[in-house]
Image 1 (tube, helix red, strand yellow):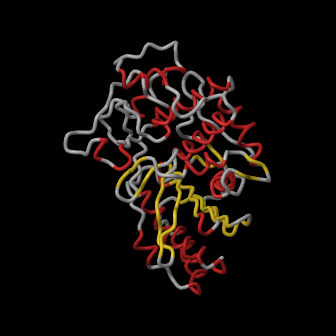
Image 2: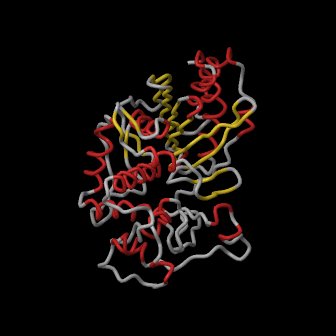
Image 3: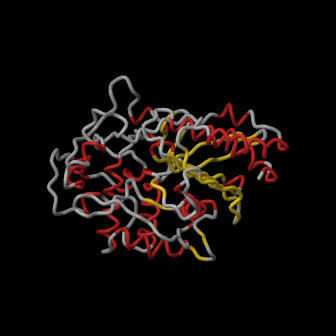
Length: 353
């Protein structure tokens, strides 16, 4: 189960070491990782501007090693939805999910299910009872994997509701209930296939990976052979950094437009609240971090085990942390400590690299 427990340890960011100590802190970080004080960290890659400023592989890997960063994949699927909309294959995020699946007659029919739109899935605010963070949820992803038809699994889910002791949608910021649902993102990927007439992996290669200069990619697939846009794709950390830079550069890369500027901006604009420390965009986790006397945006792609791709637009930087801490309950907290105790302070004083 891909439960992500993120609090972002602002206390560490507020206690950043002096610039002169940045290089020492990175040396300390390497030593701590070697001693497994952060569990199984496999690589860290930091890019500032066009320069890969600091890169380490702790498991014998190299810059060409593919890393399974689990649900980091979701953000890539979100980009493909944006491209399909820009090309006119999908009218908008208001398009109804069921309109793409006329061959299904879903169980638990309900007008709210009929009105469910792509925008609900891409912001994790859909009406169905699907919550990967609740082991009892009918839609928990672990209940999906043993079933052959993952689309049918998702569409058949009943309507969900927050328990009586939690605020209802109208009482929450943005008027929506956030519920983390991998099955919904898998369904988004299938919608891109249906709308474009292309397999998701081929569409991604032509419209996203080749223009970004991204090399080998490995996709996982459902039992029916449908690309799993909800998690498990393998890419190199450098390629993940290249993808994340798209959003800092508002959809541009290598002198060409890959995402519309509007889509890139809206993707990292809050559309739902996860908790008191985080909002959610289009499959992006959104935070703020201290920056001098102000606060600056931090955008994050998250995968279980503490895998993270972090965009820091105020520093013109991207950091990629890959791990195999899949069985640790503190995996995300460990990666956040690396980010905010070591990487961000060093980025704030470029000479630290």
